[in-house]
Length: 100
Image (tube, rainbow, N blue to C red):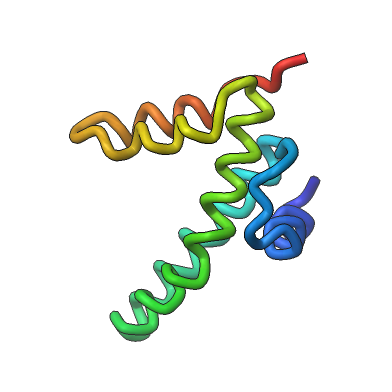
């Protein structure tokens, strides 16, 4: 799956938390979202907030599908709420190999 396909799949499954998602799908979309937010922040701060609001739900859905692909529950998304290492722990879980 290339970058464009990953973004297309995530936007077509905008709020679909069911199913499984590949590493390429998840990381491609999260990379696109990070680039879009950075570009918007360079233009105007309020535009960046709008982009974050638009990309929040599909990013959560892509991460939930990715966690399910690794054999974990989507509830593991809540690990990001832990102070300090929560975000790093979530990124490590998203980088795991898919379960067979």
